[in-house]
Length: 90
Image 1 (tube, rainbow, N blue to C red):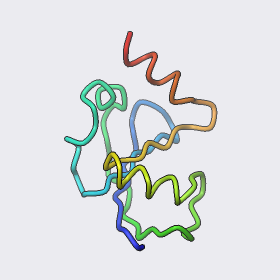
Image 2 (cartoon, rainbow, N blue to C red; image 1 turned 45 degrees about the vertical axis):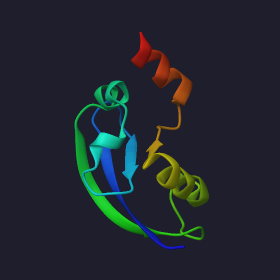
Image 3 (spheres, helix red, strand yellow; image 1 turned 30 degrees about the horizontal axis):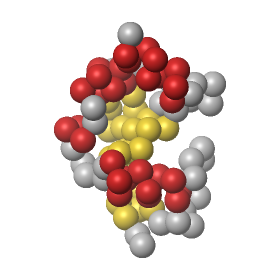
């Protein structure tokens, strides 16, 4: 299955990106998470399938997240989702 996704750079952290299933569909992102991401800047759109080579992400995981929650968050190598969530919920 081939899908187009839209990638935005997150101002909060270097190397943090959010992939959206629909262009500019920021409503699919939880309000607190969206605030924690900082300003979102469009970077590119790509066609993705399970064999697409991505620099830092597993394309199958990206596709699953896009289907289930309409976005995928790419964190910097040193960050974890648990750390980000703990900062958001404080």
